Image (cartoon, rainbow, N blue to C red; front, side, top):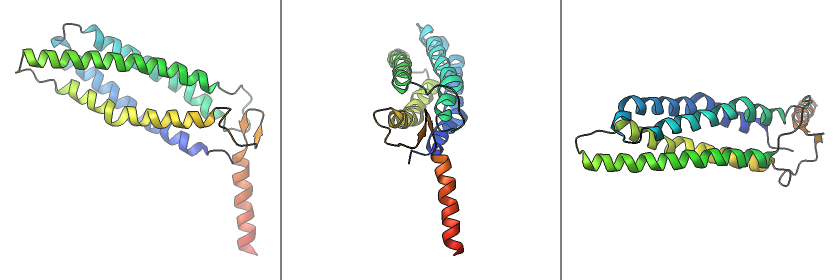
Length: 180
């Protein structure tokens, strides 16, 4: 039987309801509080642009297409998991590069001006490390499981998983066994 859609929906829900809003809030907070200290404030704006772009790409295209692969009545094509991984990896690498640049400039400025508090930037860096990167790793592992070479399920109708139908049949069978 295929991996259940619940695992995918759980990660998507966490990204959409917790991680993305928190990171966006912290980026905006960093722009408001710390942005004027940076000699290269364009890095913050680039980070915001890259992060927003990745978020929109995933929310509008990736997440719905992945969830639809579990829908037996889906009539559209199956997403190319390798392409999804490659595209998101490219975006995430840009985000990491921008974070490293910001972290370096924050350290340099804090050394030069010991009175400056970079609370917003530290919160942002910590949030990426504690919540964003771990959940994105979990998401990537789930995507890898959907790659054609890793899908062991023969219970497919075209590109769609029929395991949901199997789960209903299994539950009915359990009820019949319990009734007997």
